[in-house]
Length: 83
Image (cartoon, rainbow, N blue to C red; front, side, top):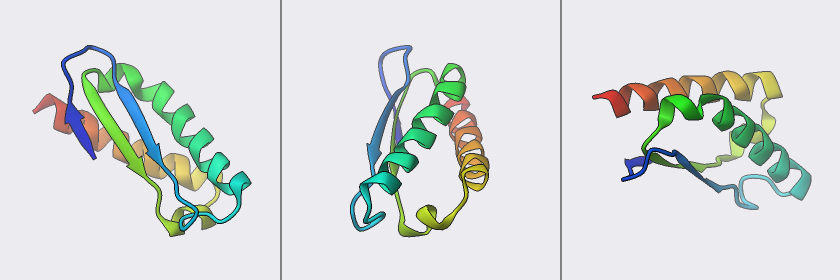
């Protein structure tokens, strides 16, 4: 989910519940990967408030798979922000 904000800085919100990942270590891994990926794409997402909601299948994916999915999502959001 994303909305335009009035600033030039993108903001990120994370919702990774215990339904998504039972173990804290798994929730923290997801959060760490999402934050890291967001930092790399923040320059292209200026002016957006983004909320990432974790889903259960995400925990079963490897780190490279998650990074690839996040890359796709950031590109879609970037295109949406430009239009």
